[in-house]
Length: 111
Length: 275
Image (cartoon, rainbow over all chains, first blue to last red; front, side):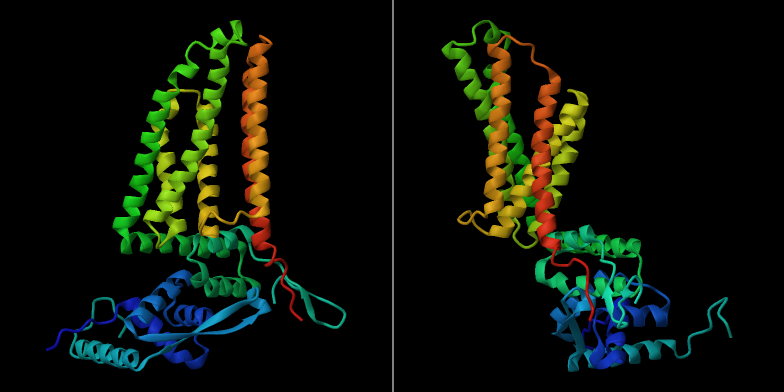
């Protein structure tokens, strides 16, 4: 097996949110998507820190969008997964599903 | 949109503004343009009804995270910069205490012989000591920023915190109020000098406002010197209230300058108007 670096939990959550949002993926909806689906509110700054880390790894790309008055005249920064990013998400999904298969139900888990 | 009022045509014309100080902190202490989309996101959510407390929590949390990440990724140069700044400050102060020690010994002599060459030289020495203090603030801030260029504002903040922490044990030895005032002045000095160096990138162009503050500050020092000299020459008792008044004037000058900077930087944010 070749040596791989799997995505961390937060990285995976952010990448999945970007994947779900498509072309509308910028800071606010990404954080909102994560909060809505997982019930965990991330700091906006942490979302950007993760996205910048992913960008430096070549897993996401970003482009500057339009500035609006609602944002105090500041531009949005849109993110999108790269081909390598999409591949790593699928790979992580496969790995997690393989691990889940045949795993006994944990104590206290709802049936 | 929460917090907004509507005019007769039903258009939103006046929205509450996001906490200016928090935005200013993000702009100043964050890593420049990289923080712009983040600030935009926070403003957008604030306009959508988030509370001021939420805004502050996001801003401070983001800055803290940014500083910690900067520390982790550039730990060596970060620590080197802070240590270099502290060592320079200590050596400088030690040198000054040795050089200028004789100036402050037996000040009563000046009262008895105010117009002698020795007394005048001692006045000059006092002024040189004060000037060296300001030079120290400037040079130490410059050194710290030069050593760690990756996150200049973060390392400047860390240096200031280190200086404050270092001075805490000495608070007991002299009057607490005096120590606090001196430390506040030094910290403000370093912050102003450091932010100015970061903003200007070099010493070539000095903006008009900074020139004005420098002149004001020099004038304040001159008045302090004059006050001190008149007390000695006129054989008046040197009162503490005058000393504190002078110190407060200096602190107020720096505070005014920071307020002006703050006002200029955030006035563009102002009240958001949405047509």
